[in-house]
Length: 409
Image (cartoon, rainbow, N blue to C red; front, side, top):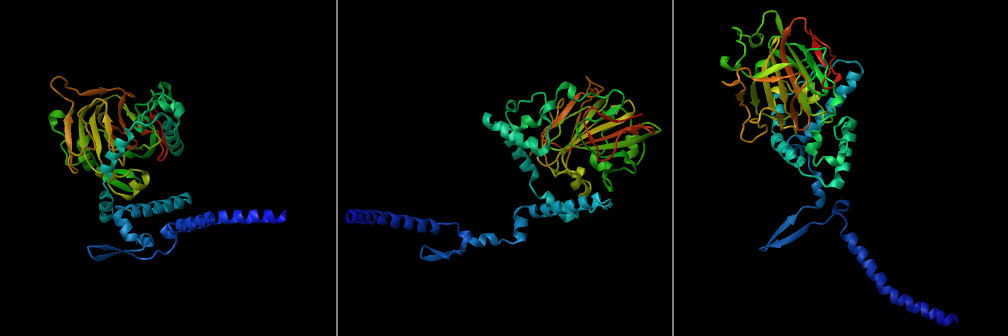
């Protein structure tokens, strides 16, 4: 019996041998196609019209130097370096050390502005409007909620499948009781966000963050014609004095930064009348506090919509400042406003007056009334006139929500 069994095993091995040889050959072939980055490939030559064209080894692709990477990414490498610098500053601040602001030089600002943020923001806006499949909405929105700490319990519609695209999710409305409007104070926060700076405006310079200022005139632009104003400008060479219309009043400001996870609509901060809108097409650089410490007059570089008018104490203005991926600023009662549009060039501005023959006062706004919205998140700047005893109920760096008190007399 042993001999026949041995003969049968020998025949079986002979039949299997060709298959094993084929498998071994295939394995060698697969290894030969293994990614070239893990082994040194030979130079390859191709013949083209009797001329040889040599290609460099694939591993040479991994030998790009930092400078070409920086140039190719339009400053992306430098932006990463700035993030590292910001982290170091935050660590020093935690130790109680006050770090003087290190301002960007002209070439650094020019490098940052060379990045096509307006084009990228328009592309981002179109991407946000693409309808997501029903099955994909929950995982996409859940990732955003987890990343930015969004509280969906405050949303008017908590079901994530309700929002067809990212744009609708960004502009979600809140439940009516989620943001009670303070009735005891004359000025409330127009939005959710973080208080960056506040106080009196002195010498026509406004602090965007502590130690870094911007020009009030460059930010708001020159005064409009007297016919469009509900009050006459003061006869003074100081731009600040031109805004203060009543003797004994001071000019105040407040800067609120909206993070990506914040509620993106903004509301009227007080009872006032909007008489004029000025739109500044501009850059769309980031306006986070770290960037505001680095670039002087950052708000003056960026696209913004300035609403001016008056309240019971004189001049009042609210400015919505755009930022990266926030090219869309919408004012509900202004259908002629089109932000981040290629038809408008940087360095210019366009005006629109709400004072007409039929409406001599402008657009009346009640405290807490819906005013407009961002497409993601950005900054609100309030500049207004008030008596000297106006008192802010704030602390720099605090979180605030729409409807909470900013200050009162």
